[in-house]
Length: 477
Image 1 (tube, rainbow, N blue to C red):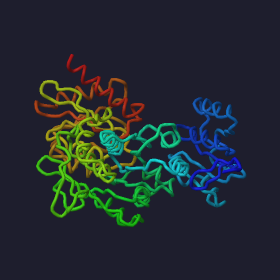
Image 2: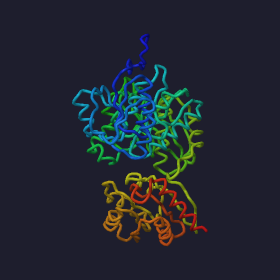
Image 3: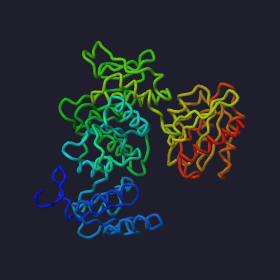
């Protein structure tokens, strides 16, 4: 330290180190700035060379950072460390060259972990195919209700680098981590962590379901207090069994049923804890009522139980769990009630961008007119339709890959009336809502749960949900 070198608490010297940052965007730019500020000689490489990339490049070059646009394949000479944006696939030539040269590859989460101070706030980490953002936000709300200085960070909008290196001091961080981020974070060791669920997703990136699950399971490595898993999803428990944790770390399950010892669950409409109580063989602690969870859909109750388990692992009292859940308001487009029109409820779950999320959404209602479709991303729909068929009163299909859903409906729910909308213009969502209204009767729910990505018709799932809400409002005019 006396030499003037900037060193993190794990002994990593960045002064004079040749570091290549792979990718610009929301993670690459701050990573490059952080590394440069700590004396590293930074070169940023980026596949794209569009107006946005040139703007970001100019910002970095003004600081003295080298930027190479339009070539993300070649490893710059002399590179001693690569820090990558999480979305870059592991099989890119740049990474193959780095591995061949014995150069470490980190993501921004790994960099943040390495640069934490010795008194840094511990991390309570969450991953899973679906429900991550909601669970992390619930957890932050519970921690805040307990009087702790905290924030929801990671893949939830606030970068982990900003949280770790900013001036704000925290007692604990609620951290959302994607499978991409976990892949590039080999030394991450959270206080406690949860895997909410596992279903096929991003397999084009990971290469296989096994590789995807392995990356998710990294979140349990080195946990000190609790590895939280989903009792209804055996794959998450298997990841706990395989994890190398610290002595004394416990496996804590959450279930929508009656919990056993070392589990959290639901009894007579009450969320209860049989994990963090004395004599858990006989005793249970009431945490909150199901009605305190907003919305009280089954998958969201599961999210609440996972958040509660992590909070309880950190020593949060039961009353803070209740207060935190009551204070929590979910983000838009997550099973959000838009309006009731002529006795029919209209619900926006545009965030249900894969079949696993759509299945959870469909399970929350008894009688549904389903609006679905978009970009399937290689998904199949037979299992989803078969499980949900008895709830469907009709379906309105939109988007590029709607035929895949139509064919699954024909196989597994042939009695369900289907409207196939062959249009992608800006009025398509209004037409879909109008068709759904025609199919629905009083007491039904018209549910936008597309089970597909949105980019064939909309900029993102938010824009798709906004279009649905606007169309519903026009019905009531």
